[in-house]
Amino acid sequence: MPAMLRRDFFTNIVAGPAALGLARTEGSQTSGEVVVERPAAQTPHKGKVLLAVQAHADDVPLFAAGTVAKLIQEGYTGYLVRATNDDMGDAPGLGTPGTIGEHVLGNERDNEKLVSILGLKGKFDLNYNNHYMGGVAFNELMCRLIFLIRLLKVDTVVSWDPWAHDEENPDHHMTARAVEASCWIAGRAHDYPEQLAAGLTAHTVTDKYYFARRPEITRVVDISQVVDKKVDANRANVAKGPAGTNGSRLRADLAKRGLRLPLLGDDDLTADRNYIKEFVLARNRELGKQYGVEYAEVFHYVGPASFAPGSSLEEYIKKNAVPLR
Ligand SMILES: [Zn+2]
Image 1 (cartoon, protein in one colour):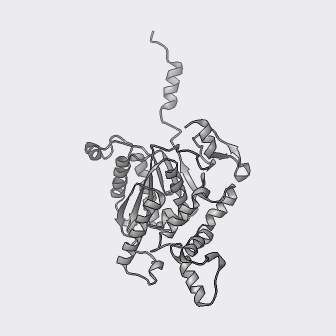
Image 2 (image 1 turned 30 degrees about the horizontal axis):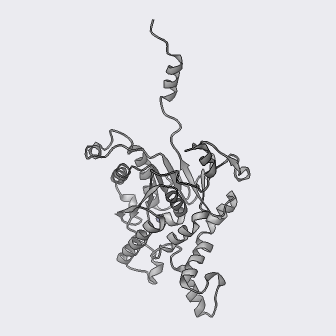
Image 3 (image 1 turned 135 degrees about the horizontal axis):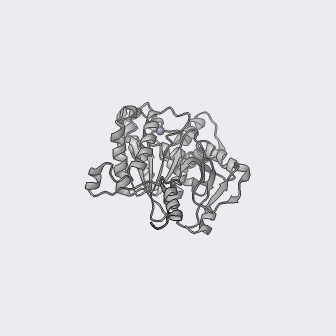
């Protein structure tokens, strides 16, 4: 990517938010450094493939929908993986506790909507039981992800952080660990040779955007320009999650008590959208304020390896080798 273009959408923060405004010209990022990724004017990611891997239908909408929408808009071809079937959902949109079958169907429908909302090319549901992924064979989960990484030739993943703090959900843990290991092993020429014999080729994932409840923040993505897509991704989560139709249901409940909130407007769609923007995206707004943008998502970002074992040896040989006497 030309240096000029990079300057358009990367801002380097060396000493925290106070240093905001320093431009960076390098794409690589050193450990511990926080980079603010701004919208690109063009499509610098054209030809690259993105895989967003979530455990549940509301993970990506809540933590990374803005970033996924932004990266797709900037040229990526994107796919979505949902590891579970969400059968232990809360079912707020059903108006009743809901049966397991209703949870599965409702979340499957909600998840499907993310494809068009975020501009993805397709999705894959792995269909493990919700909250039971602790018992899934790790190698099986990895094998399925490695297959997809090689098949789709994935360059970048967006998923749960395997190194995150405060995480309780075993589905998030398992998904995160399997994604991380798969990103590496998919690029190894001798692992899972039967996949290679079937025509796939080894393919390494180079960029990882890891989200978490309390992440080690190394990448801040300015999602202000795509915030409405994040609102719609969360509005799609009717069967579970804190968004969905909560706004219109609150509006109806208040009306029964003879009350109204101006924020929720005069129709259900406005109520749902404004409720999500005000309450569900409050954290994105807070993060935005912290980093000098309107709305932000934050990640533990892991970029292309800056250290290749043996590279210093090669360099040494190049500089110092002399002809044999
Ligand atoms: Zn989840």
